[in-house]
Image 1 (cartoon, rainbow, N blue to C red):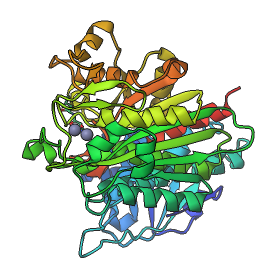
Image 2: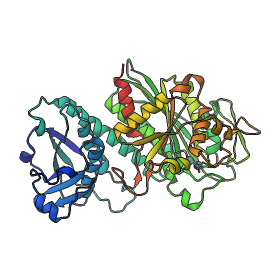
Image 3: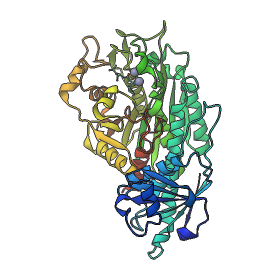
Image 4: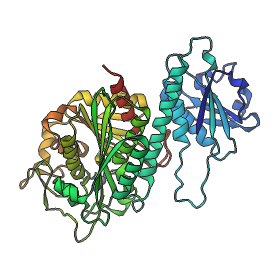
Length: 486
Ligand code: BES
Ligand code: ZN
Ligand code: ZN
């Protein structure tokens, strides 16, 4: 999709169709050109409601009020509504509420790119999106001193981050037999080559040498051998050093503690955390952010078989802690334990963030739309939540407490891989991970459970059915913020 920015008035721009964003309270305003037609069509002006006036080549989309979040879902919905039409070019006004505030412009571009996404790798008949060009008119601000450069930057960043989100969606949506650990490693290597990133792949022999025995145990029953991926973006004079770690379970059958049939479907999405890390690395390298970022992915498949790890096993993690296994479906925390230890051994970071579809309990607790943010210290958690908000993702804090922590005690090992209570499962999973964060990183770490929003069963906002790319926008935003601080 190509975007053009222009100061040409909207009426003078040649295009097949115009998209008009209209706020509910302006519906009756005299400047609304097609008031009578909209009324006839029963257009109410509710957020994301669309009305296509074919004879006018105009598509109206409503927002409750003009702000970034609303504009993002509005343009996503609008472009989706044009999917089966034969329009090729679109024009739209920029709707910036202030000439200095380019957030809505960026959100508009993100909405278009995210809304135009469709995953048709497995369809015999591939529907092609015909819209290729979108012209955005900045004319309303021609009386102000418009900072065209800032507008162009906003457009560019929006396009990069949304395309990286779609890249993550593609990885997650790919089936487990087309995307297994080796494939995730290949995707990373290819992306790294294109974007000038360093990329190191750890195979089983090296994983054994690094004493990543818990990760290897989870992987053991699969015919697909595990990989740990390390991507690095290392500019000169970085503003900070950040480590990202992702859960990359290319399939989670539950292992011997097998998932019931209904719960196993969609578990190709258990690689969403790792796929988000790869997408974030793509975005920040394309933006050329002056910040050093390391992305680690633990890519593993959790299967059953004679060789499978079992409840009653005691495993030794990379940091020497012993773990009593009571449920092989709590595998993500085991893979993350070793990957976190390895990441901290390799990089001393100012911040460490991990992304994982870790618990069903997170979904139960905060719903399908929201990520749960955990950790020891408020500062990194608050930074994630603020970044999520400005990027248009939902995130909320779940606090640790010492009473819940006790539920992870084991009689025979240092810790148990599940808690002994039915409640607070997202928090106890986070507290399990805490055991694998070293003292230097204790207050610099936040754990992001994306189990809710990572995979969308009923389309919402800018997300179609399937993978959402959760985490990519929020973390890219945070890394942009850290790049501009000081
Ligand atoms: N991958 C799942 C968590 C999950 C569930 C992600 C639903 C997305 C949607 C994870 O590995 C898992 O199975 N967790 C168990 C933990 C339990 C055994 C303590 C769970 O949440 O039930
Ligand atoms: Zn599991
Ligand atoms: Zn899992």
